[in-house]
Length: 94
Image (tube, rainbow, N blue to C red):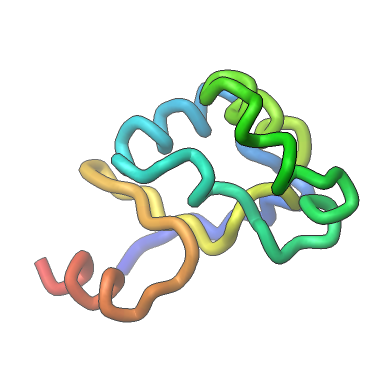
């Protein structure tokens, strides 16, 4: 399988990339947040996200790669966020 490895801590996803990935994934925007990360916790985002629009949340994600849940697998047709072995098996089987 050909892939591109990207360190999103150093090269965080852009607003445009995150918007595209979000729309392609059909997941809730909350799934894109690294909820166990120190930055997420220090910013107290658990309480703040509910009062933000999806657009505001995507913009926030684009400010720091450490807010974004990893790994992210982006294909032509879909986006997987986080690692769920079964999802990867299904996707890569095709």
